[in-house]
Amino acid sequence: MKINLEPNIGMANFILGQNIENYTTMYNFNFIRGDTNDNWDEYNFFDELLEVYVDKKTKLIESIASRFNCIYKGINLINLDFDNFLNIIKKKVGDLEKDEIWVGEMNCKMFMRYPIWVYKFGLIVKIKL
Image (cartoon, rainbow, N blue to C red):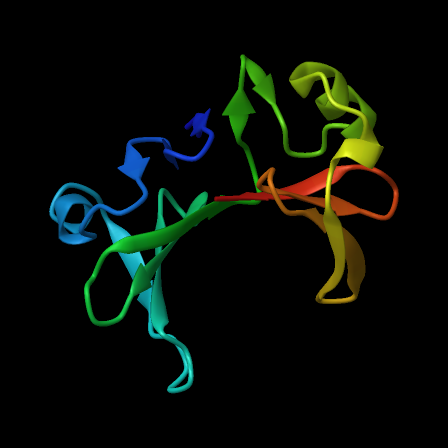
């Protein structure tokens, strides 16, 4: 299944701000309860191709992520070289605010206004709205 990205809107058919029950009645999912300190729970859809993070109280979708495929303008962004992504969005790396994070044992750069995490070798490893 192809996971299409609509920046600031959603991925696949999942829309930010929508109630998760709109989707749990239509698709099979795996539920992962967030820790007691977390304000969210996680729902995985399509054999874990799509991660959906939901506010525990309101049940509204707060964030959506994909680590395996994410199509934008006809191109799969996962494992795409970051320089190629910059060409697609017509930006320079200096234009983007970033933060360094650890994902497991990987040191990644997370770019704030764009929903991407980039591994140290310059490949995109996760898209998260």
